[in-house]
Length: 567
Image (cartoon, rainbow, N blue to C red; front, side):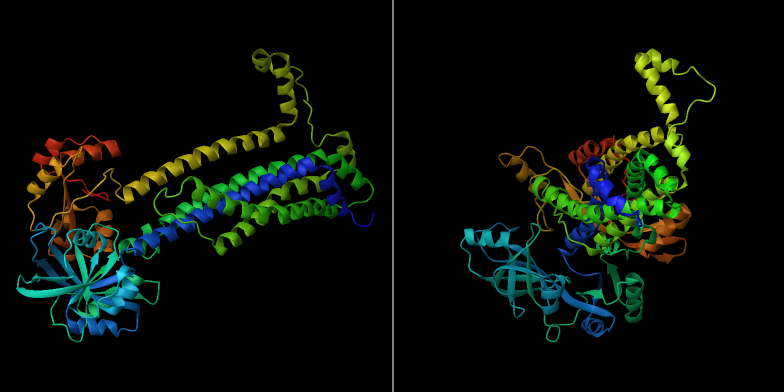
């Protein structure tokens, strides 16, 4: 026989059971990596989509005048941008509605803000074409239709400077929103609108590298204030904290590395058993003239054939399995999670599969090539006899009788195979524990990140409604079991530099970019959320904490969210 490699296909066909078992092991490993990669990229894409749901922008500049807006529009570093203006609070005249329902916040969007930045979804009607036309939220529209109120509203508009003026608005359309809101959208024409400091400019940068640094340079050059879409930038890996940017990639790398190690062990075990079973065959081939290189080629060809069959099936199975699982069984789990198709996952999975299979086949191939004909025929390569110790396995005999002692002696004579088999069995348990805990952490993290609270309805008051009266009215409604009061305010805050640890100070500088006044940092906007007693009880229950409400209230205690180590 001139070409010994033809024996590979014959062996694979003759020992179909062993071949199928090895193929299944490789397919499962590749499918697992494909599924993990698909989940990772799909999760990032879904989170980015959710982050853009309330505005597709990376940075925004505020407290702008008309000249600032025009200057920013002409900046070549922006991919796109849009301007809005806070017009004020509008109270229209109607006896059929309460004061809270008659009060609307008016925002003006220019054409780019409607189309490119906020992508306002029309349910009916059209977009406003001038400053006297508005869109209203679908919930507000339902109230007006129920009360049969005209689309022409007459009332008073109170601006940010507390100046009021009579204003008539015509409702020309209805838009969809993610929240219960009394916000109406009008049209902004920069050329004809009055000059003030109420403009905000939202933008996306052309370059997706160093977004925050480039935006800060633009803000400094134009002497305007800057803020960023923190959630979106961190998902893009461009947040202000570099360590946090790399966090998700590091987690994915750890998981992928763990899968690779487990895959190598499982596939190596399959190849090793297959080679050891044919060790006599390789010895016979060596005795009739086969070289070491030809023996290695036999094993590597077997690996190549199995890779060609199993890798495409594994990739398809991984993608199909995760797609079916999310679509049929856990649709809506963890929010709007959509499974996507990512070429980079397929390429990496294929390369990883080839690398893993050939690494797994390398050591068995080397063992097979080194075997001598005499040792192979005698079987001393696989089975090692006890040299001098004739007795052994006493504990095995006591626990499992005579069969246990025989099994113990067999294990000692085949230690390498025993170790590999034990490791392969351990892998399944380790992977189950690893991924079950990972999923649990992922669920809890998502719950915390989305500030998930088990409530069935939300009532939002404005400055014209007394909170105590609103709470009393809600509690008196039929069917209300429990209420939770939350007050959310943004306040300026100062921090003494001497009271901060180095780690916290570095994080503060990277994230907040605070102004410095002597020995203090001045933070322009700190989100202060105030909880009532029921909220704190719910917080204790959901997070397994034990915060005493009376101490929390009387001692002016606070809970720092995403806190760093501070003194």
